Amino acid sequence: MRILFIARYRDPSMHRKVQWMAQQPGVTIRAIYPNLWQDELVRVEQRAADEVGLERRVLPMFGSPADPHRAFYRSLAFGMAGFRPQIVHAEEEPDSLAALQIALCRRLWAPQARLLLHTWQNLDRPLSRPVRWVLARTLSAADGIFCANREAVDLLRRRGYSRSTPLIPAIGVDTELFTPRQPKRSGPFVVGYVGRLVAEKGIDTLIDAVRLVSTGSTGAREKLPRPLRLRIIGAGPYESHLRHRMDEADLTGTVEFLPPVSPSQIARQMAKLDALVLPSRTTPVWKEQLGRVLLEAMAVGVPVIGADSGAIPEVIGDAGLIFPEGEASALAERLRRLLSDPLLTADLTRRGLERAEQEYSQRVLAARTVDFYRQVVQ
Image (tube, rainbow, N blue to C red; front, top):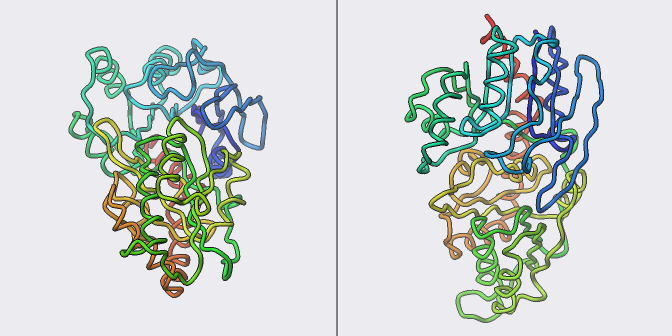
């Protein structure tokens, strides 16, 4: 089975899924990635390379690879005629120019191949007429669309798509990189946030919750089993606002900001945490679509707390704590529970490790993806 796999992957932990896919019996893969990725957190240059059962090729793009909708590849054929794929799997949103480009190339150069796309989208936003035109053509062309969350499946159905929609996220957690650490048993209780510093991530709610835990209901400094610290790792336009919020809350010695780190270093940073919080806040145009940082923390053995925005409760399941988005007092209560209950912390750690490995590891997602390939080509 010959697979042409096109995705905007940019680091080895993402590529690991494709490596696992290539190890499945009877599978040959040509993977195409952007030759350059740059966003507010990382810049990565990539080169072609070959592995057993796997060719890796790179292409430049028109527009920013970090733009999921308007960027497209500098290619007229993606090598389809020579490679002769049975499946063209593009991890591109159906309403994107790249998905339309790949669908047209498949029609011209590999009409016998099945076309599979992917969607993260879980919010029914108004679409312009040109975007609706693109979406209609890609939905008509796609033989299946992988969905990152249940709401994405529901949205496709409301838009009239009736073909297969397997619930398989594009990216899980690389459990070869994110491995269990030894739990911390002394020192400050370090709560972490890792990611973009933007308003919709709700980091101000997390700062307010830390203030509530530190000061208690009376406003006096509360006696805690361990001193509480908040570590914010990332960058973005909201950083100055968050620093001002920290100063207003008199948390200068409690909150620290660290710059973004490479994917290979995130696991080491995760291992230094006692809990990770993803306090995302839904907006009219966005809500959390997966929350990969939750999976990474669970795989390292760090208990997680998430807001009830979008797919977060679906991802966490019974392996963490959930709070109503935007409610700092509710988040503070969850933090106090972890601080004061070692048995709860140990139980969530165990559940998180199991869930990350059994449901969201790159190895498991790779096997499920190839199983779907086999169904499609039957």
